[in-house]
Image (cartoon, rainbow over all chains, first blue to last red; front, side, top):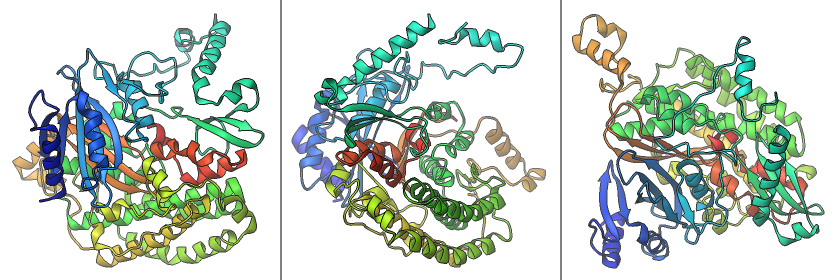
Length: 178
Length: 414
């Protein structure tokens, strides 16, 4: 059995069969990659189990990000890209977060490097990370309103200033000094 | 009123950041200073707020986002091929590397095969890109610490690589040369000679730079035992690339999860021991030579053949076909108007950029535009580990440590 098959067997033994509403909600395979959808409440347990069980050894959180499936619900698909470095084995753990309750627990206790990634989740998607020691915007300015990577946030642009409309546009800017 | 709102912004910032500094900052025992975002040695618009006890760094908090241009959001609004053009501009010292990561993700999602000639050329150009990026790193790093002369020498060598890039794509930096399915077009005659000349020319130059720096007492003073991070901590913070290998951890995406035919090439992965600035410098100096080895092997095995996949659903047909084939016209029309449709699903592809693991999380939704292009930029987690690396060193060393992690703000902020 491959490492991923062993991992899925161990997870099923510990958390139960993957089915909707359970701790493990689904297991999908696409283009040779395995994605494990877990319930939000069991996220930390699953990540800790994957990291601390020696035979599984998913100790490396390569990437943490999300994508917005709006207007479909649950809209936020949060992807934790895990890796076993010795076997070069990759596994994606996904959590589906609904739009009316965009809250997620922090995984800093398991993977300390998730710190800035979770700040980016807050900044870009508006996912409130409970338990995060320093949840503030990371890429956008501190006083920005809105969460840019959400699908219902417009792709805005800045009006081009020519000499004939320069004054007009400058007046509309937030820190304009007239 | 403008002055009031500016005043309010200042107060809010200090209050919000109090939790990042030790209680000694409030009592005045330590000083909280601002470094950047305009600073000659922070390698871009990086703002650091450092808490200093005299000259010793107690905590260094990076504040990023000054170069955020919303590339990920922008890519969602463009078709797959048009979005590729934006990828050059992220890690602007590794243009073709970014192209490659994105193309590999699209090819994985669309299940497209890349012809062998294109694969070998991709490897060759990625390694040239690695050399070019390391040259900028070496130049700027040594300019910060010891000598500006190395800066000018390195940029002189880099000019040769930029000339090669201009020869193949017309652009010195933002080439967009790799396309989903292969390459934009074949390399011109004279490309192989230019590359061969370059790899014959560079080793002597590298020896020169080694002679200038490796046993230089000033260099050793400013790099040995500075910014030490051990392998385990580095892995916990998800450092990758030469910053991780300087601490002795053997992880290189080209060896662990080979892509584009890297398993066919013979090359070593240099490892440091102490995890200090000097070891990270040494690892990159060795990587120069390993890249030259790979390019030489690629030149020897470069096969003839097409450079674009024959899959007409993804790659446009050659213009000569449009005169006599109706299917070619239809494919051309579809690709130029709507673009190819991707299936629903997510793929994650990792490549080895000069900075570390550059990964793309590409999500397709059945339409011609990507649902999400998430970039696992290596400089983002590498910079996160900066406070860990710079605690208890002098503030003057912070500049050297930033240089040794080799961040590019385009990568960090996207």
